[in-house]
Image (cartoon, rainbow, N blue to C red; front, side, top):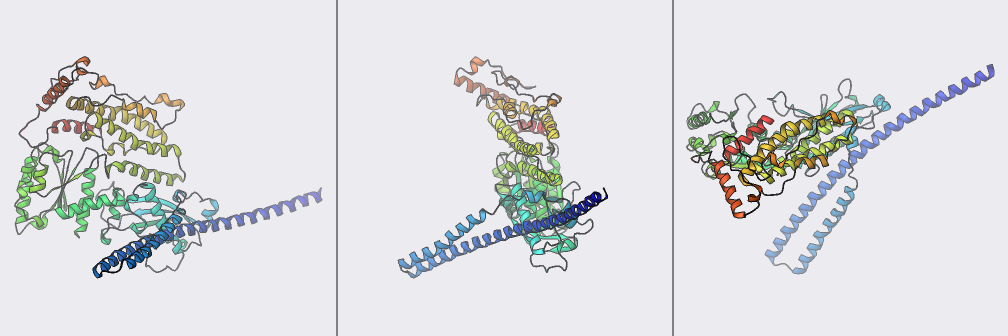
Amino acid sequence: SSHSSSLISECTESEAESVLQLRSELRDKEMKLTDIRLEALSSAHQLDQLREAMNRMQSEIEKLKAENDRLKSENQGSCSRAQSQVSIASSPRQSIGLSQHGMSLTESSSLDMLLDDTGDGAMRKEGRRVKIVVSFEDKMKWREDARQHCFLIGCIGVSGKTKWDVLDGVVRRLFKEYIIHIDPAMHLGLNSDSVLSYSIGDIKRTNNAETPELLPCGYLVGENTTISVAVKGISENSLDCLVFETLIPKPVLQRYTSLLMEHRRIILSGPSGTGKSYLAHRLSEYVVLREGRELTDGIIATFNVDHKSSKELRQYLSNLADQCNGETGAVDMPLVIILDNLHHISSLGEIFNGLLNCKYHKCPYIIGTMNQATSSTPNLQLHHNFRWVLCANHMEPVSGFLGRFLRRKLIETEIGWRMRNAELVKIIDWIPKVWQHLNKFLETHSSSDVTIGPRLFLSCPLDVDGSRVWFTDLWNYSIIPYLLEAVREGLQLYGRRTPWEDPAKWVMDTYPWAATPQHHEWPPLLQLRPEDVGFDGYSVPREGTSSKQVPCSEVGGDPLMNMLIRLQEAASCSGLQSYDSDSNSNSHHDDILDSSLESTL
């Protein structure tokens, strides 16, 4: 028995040694695998840089070719030499096209890297799991406590052997992959060159910086497990920082800022909830920093216009004009004035007449917002140099903002969970489609002025059950009441234009939440019946109006009679409004719908 026990102990010791040896080999291989993955990402970033350099070379070649052709035409060169030059210039283009095709094969989705799926126990012992964030704290003074100034864009594993040049490429590649996931269509107009620098503790790493004494892991000690990325901003004469924060594509934002800097007066026009006020504040901050000023109290003045404040606004602008023309007092003036809800003013031309004699270069920048264009638009553009910016739900930057915003929230949530939720991804993709479906329904039975902005859907919670409860409440208590009011008004103004289709039918057909045994706990989605809005042939009168009821047979009978009835209903609706103002005839109708939507929001 003693002999057998000694054999067992020897076997146990040998197995323990083999297990320890295997663990050691496994840890070494995991370290090597991590370094290989980081080097692969760095190589992919270098390939991107090479491709961009080749594109620049191609554009330079084409410019040289055009210049050469121009010189030849002036000197009346021979035709044969021109043909040979064309053949020389065409060959680099073909090689570049092949190289681009070859490089596109190496571009794979790096969402696994964003989530850092490989970080297991061995990795945590030998390396660090590091969060990558884009921080704006050094760029501007944040005037709003609730405003987000730090955006989580990914996580990576940094081993003890990771070198600085490898980390440089990984950080820039990670930023580019994040932008691609946020905006697959346009990438927001940003790329890896938008990264100005990144910091680990007190070490700030830029393109031309010297290599620190220690490897990156030497600075990732204690609670310092975050790499902070800085994006190019106003000090670099770039809009990339503002583009990243607002999720507005760079070409669109460039157009807005150029209009504002050139003409100094713009008006953002569009339906409620499209982000006009938010955009006005971001543009005003940009102007202040662009002018070399600091965001101090009083540098931006905001005037919230209502029906009773038109006289106060007129007086305020007149006093402002006097200050501009005077030699003293101009120092205390605001640099930017935001005028919210200008649609409440009946005559915009009279409001701004006080600025006609103002010294233009001394007058503050003016950014106005309103829910619809008015008949005074040409007058303001001609006499007061205002420029109109349309913020419509069917065009950028509004049309794609909801999807970009929700994808940003989803990526941050997935990074926190370190895993992907396929059902949640499906829900986040579905929400913008619902929004577009509802607006198409509103445009069909009313007009684009009453469409719903994306603001209503921004509060979608990032969990499956919570999002189902949230959408059910939003649909039954906010969306359906607003649709009822808007479509009823639209039918009275415009009449029937297309056959009726319940908007809830498409929603239920594409419902992304799987059926559960507890489905009875959530109330069913309400439906919008045609008789509720007067679509069944009877005009449903609003309180205070005298719309005439018309039987179905008469409506579907004589087309001329049908048109006359519609004109009579439109006249009875517009008769409630005053004709002595220069606002459009739908202002009362839009104010009712806007107030309904504002109370809903």
